[in-house]
Image (cartoon, rainbow, N blue to C red; front, side, top):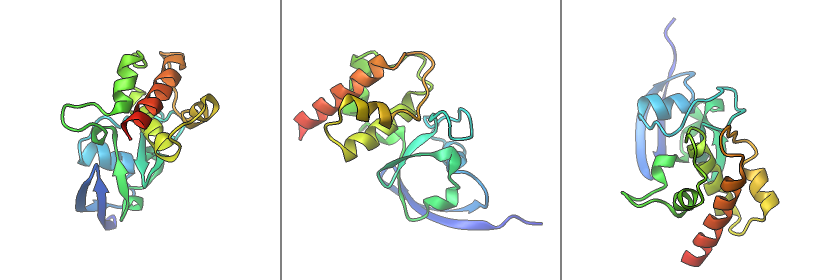
Length: 161
């Protein structure tokens, strides 16, 4: 039996896309395998680690838990869409300056959770920061530098406005 397909139209990192996809593929598969954006990682595949976090219509979501078809008509941002050219986004710059990156596997997902948080709450307190990244597991850093980097990014972004 032939799999049903879908026509999908959505914005990815600011660019309009229109393509046919097979039924049942995840948003993670679409992003990594079809668009070849490798920053979005597959860690656990069950929504527990946050390595696949992307921002859909302003909200941080686990791409492994979404069907690609659910992206129809939506705006999707991946870590590749954060910076402009060779210039790092202020969130990324804060992570570099605060040494919030170790092995880097979890970093794209944490950056995307941070982006969604700061878009919704420009001045989060520590508890709000911790809650925003609670779904992102990091085995290397111990989180202190990550929390500090998010706080620094919030201050940096507020100064840029």
